[in-house]
Length: 291
Image: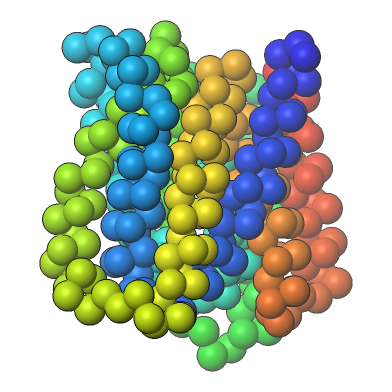
């Protein structure tokens, strides 16, 4: 495949994988707390990556480590806990929709802090995507009046972290292998994540006979290996072969998959939300066509 085909292939794969991550988090939270989910997700992912790709760490130079730390915090550690808490109050499909603010933040922050230029068509595409996202949010609030939408702020904060992550990957880690970046991130996160988990009394309360707990860990294992370890490596590769704005536009496709799983799980969906999804797709097309 050429670069153009690879970009779209990776984008579609990521949208399916990450779009399914929200329902997996929702199911995992039936047996564990949000803090435990965030910490265990990082630990499981770290164990998986270090067991198959530890040698890739040798590719990381001294000058890279500072940005490996920044991307680990902004792109994984902080958002991991924010998403876990948000899903306890807001439907998983709505959380995925709120995450669609990431391309807008990526475009603005990339221009202000990283010196990345963008074309008008990219800005139009991002704004069109935001219109579709806004309609989805407003309609979601109508359908779920009992949900606390103040928790939406947690997702907005996480999207800012993702935006910094994407721009740092492109500007400072563009010469580093995608797998090495991901493995380096989780090598740094495994110790703080383990400390956080220990503070939740997870090991003291663990009971292998607890069926709900074991099912939650099963969902979490899939989420960690596929939704985090493999998907983040693909995402890092996508940033390398495209640009931060196009890469972050995956968050416009994620809600379409997340809403599908949400409906199967009993969450409500209206025709207006379906129409909003079409608007989002138009935005993604414009962001890419600008290249």
